[in-house]
Image (cartoon, rainbow, N blue to C red):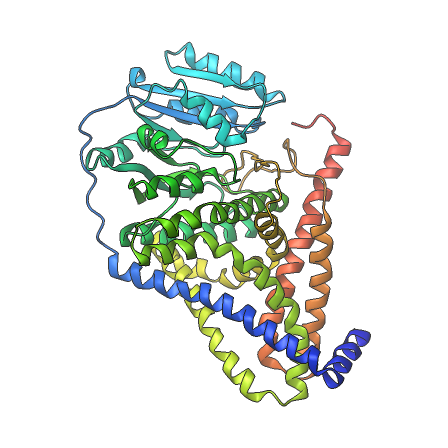
Length: 510
């Protein structure tokens, strides 16, 4: 730390170029973060303006044939749970087709076959659609299933979901209100949100997305996206929009934009939920976040030119741009965290009082983010005040994931192709159960963890230096970065070592 302190003081005192570069880069980073963070105020405005306008559920005029697709790949831990839940959906058996789109390569193949055969014997129209290759990954499996799907509507559930029995009766009526409705998306509910601090912070992030982003955008007339699961499509709309494409890692977001640019409408239901399991292990969460982040950037590259060439109103084009590019903030979160330390020494050296006074305006972006998540928690939970105490940890976690997600952003921007890595599921619900003894737990660590550890130490140095020089205003952000990188890196190592130890002791663990 002494060497680092001497370096920064030397550079700041004797290198105007270094000082100017830090000031300009930091200003630009905060400007980007402020622009996207302030968008939270826009969401809050539309939320307050449009809340309470949900119409009552219309009656179901008829019971059309529905196909439920269950795309899965090596889902041994949850195969039976999802199939049993779908077969329990309240709907006439003769009008419900279930396709288990299984691309598995392990013993899940036999478990899927046996489970499907069990329900076939009970009179269900359920099929085991097993492909010999994963061409197109999830998008390829969905497209392959559509070739033989007999349903007029197609519901999709990932393997970690446990759909409610009333799902179809809660969603189908909206299609008969307007024949231009292509999709009805439900809110994700969490089977294991109270399992750990990791799952609680994930729940807060997802609640913000569904309640504020999906709900507000839909009521305000903006584009929304299918979330890949927990929704039901009009099959005609899928074909009209060009079917599933596999050239991005977020085939759901891609198809959503193509459909809406074709004039199709989406309906989001906040009061109808689809329970799902949150990743209880941090390395599984990292792979999920990487795929979502990179896929969104890939979709932005693909669809933004189409958006701006379309004849939709300018306000929609602007909002679509924010929607598709919001993951671009992660490299700037990372850059701001790195620059916080030299910036503190620059402030200590004096001479830039006007600059730092002006920079204080950017704090308002954090207020917008806080309000965004406050209203999302208030809309869902009676004990929302208690849950909101997790907001600082959520912010720290967002900073801690900046390295992982920045990598995804750059790979998406520079068109680096990568495999669709599905998120491992462990069948964990409530506060009970353990992921450690389950199949598919990641045991390998990559270079990202090393960078996160280095940044944790670096930001700790920033905290100590800020306290030493009595730069108290810098401490909260330095501390959040330090906690975020420490939490994510140490938990990554801890979870991988636990899995590796058990794998060594019990090589046949299932």
